[in-house]
Image (tube, rainbow, N blue to C red; front, top):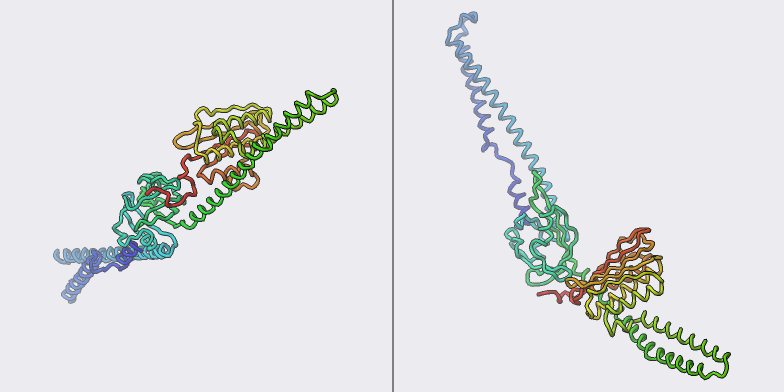
Length: 455
């Protein structure tokens, strides 16, 4: 344990009384008492041959008696003062020993913690740290380290942490405790590890923030596991979408064309029917075929809307929203003017599926009279808002793990694969609003490889 152990060793010795002022007081007081006693004894011996009344003493005898009394009083006062100061010194020493014992216990606790721990001043100078900190950051000269520019750190989104964004600086600036903030840190020989960082400010006796305690936990294994899970989920979704597209193409190109040809043939047969009865039967068959064609188009759109593939997200969302409005016979308000014609394919597909699932939830559960859909691209983020005036509900604390809200779970899982986020605002009887944020760069997805971050 650096720094703290040196303080313990330096402060662990008791005070030497020979170097203290109370000891001088004690000697002066004792000398005064001894001298006064000696003079008094000599005076008594000299006057031992007789007694005289008080008014019979000479003037010099009275002065001598007063001087002896003052000397005796001074000696007694010095001895009492010395005793009190010595007692105070020992009480102070005992208190220091208790503090040092607590510090030894703290040092032992910090030393055996599985995490790296350090204490910094507001100037980012290192006050103390445990061995795990030195091992983690390859620092053999820990007492002389500074946190000014020791290493670079990146957020999960790949953004470089500036000095004022570090958890320790934010804790000192705001006085709040920072809990478990993940960051990718370059340490020692250039190795990069994922750390979960917590920072807690401490104050002195006046209430002024004097230092910050920082705990670093290596969570690289957890992050790699999350990355593997995300890649697996992304692979499953990609396989699903590929199969959906294949089936949609087959339905559109084969079954759809066959039904269209059958409808044309029935229409021709209807026009040549010899009597009204047969003409009515053929017309009924043709309407059935047209209904089948409509169902096939709906299934194709659910599987993989070809308008999304051919014309982009804006046209696909407009068609989707208005289609649901017609199906539910409700008002639909769409604002997509700020949306570009084309976006990255993965982002377009995820955004479409998210809106599709949101509108499906409205149809199943909301009993809404109107729906509003807004989407715009801003600062590399696609922001989508889906709002309804339906029944509403009490949102789960974590939508991605809310077992009763399968629609929200599906939305969260899709967003997770590309680093997107979902926020839900709702209350019973007040409708529901979904806020969706999607990054437009593949490299900022939550589960990307560590090597993909900036060098």
